[in-house]
Image (cartoon, rainbow, N blue to C red):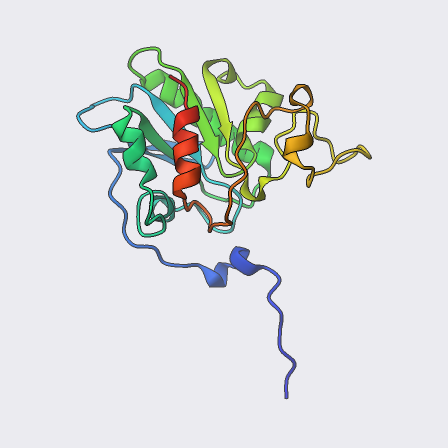
Length: 222
């Protein structure tokens, strides 16, 4: 009898790729030269974006899929709260940012995010502040890199498991670095988190609970 084989990759295993239902087609798609795509869902009745919210995918295997992102934010993966509809009701336009390779370094994919931000600013009507949200570290890294778009956007960081990964002075090389620090005990002057919410439940990638979704919408730039 052969011994059982443990799969240490979990959701990162390409063989575990889940097929998601076909999502509503975006109003437009931006192909990004550094290795990604942006899928734009404008608020109803608009021909151009005015109040853009860029929501970036996070680490995983294989390319990003707008079917997966839409499933978790608006489809059956979020049965109690429709995040995209909530954004549209408040007059926001959603830009879903995906990557050709979600296993690349944060620095590499931050270049894709920067290109998407600059593209959104160039296409935007009016001068409303842009909001960048993500399921990983891209927003915080853009601040550290001093990307040219950061002066125009307000970063809202979605961090799975509520870890202390958005701290501006976070450095694994230092003894005091603790990615599992209790965010409630981290002084605001030492970190980049001006406000946060600890979710009551753990959810699949991109799935949006009512508790989290309502809080995020309330934090968005005016």
